[in-house]
Image 1: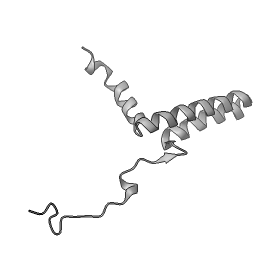
Image 2 (image 1 turned 180 degrees about the vertical axis):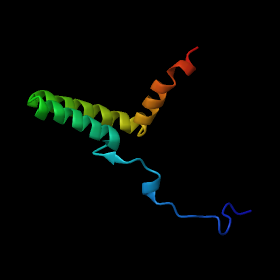
Image 3 (image 1 turned 90 degrees about the horizontal axis):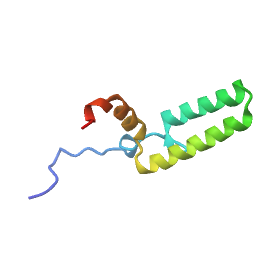
Length: 87
C-alpha cells in the first residue's frame, strides 16, 4: 500500500509554515521593542538608554525565538488564561 494517494498532495511553500522573523526576533515583538526604544532615545533624548534597551530587548527576543518562535503568542495566552490553569 502506498503512503501517497494520487491527487491528495499539495506542494506547501516554506514561507507558509515558518514564523515571520525580523532579524531573528518575531516581527511584532521586534517592532514594539524598536518603537519603545526609539521613543526613549528620540522622545526623551536618552540616547544611551534607548540603545541599551533596544539591544537588550532584541537579544532576549532572539534567544527566546530560537527556543520557541511563537513565544509572544504563548506568553499572551498564558497571561490571559492564568486563572484557569491554577491548581
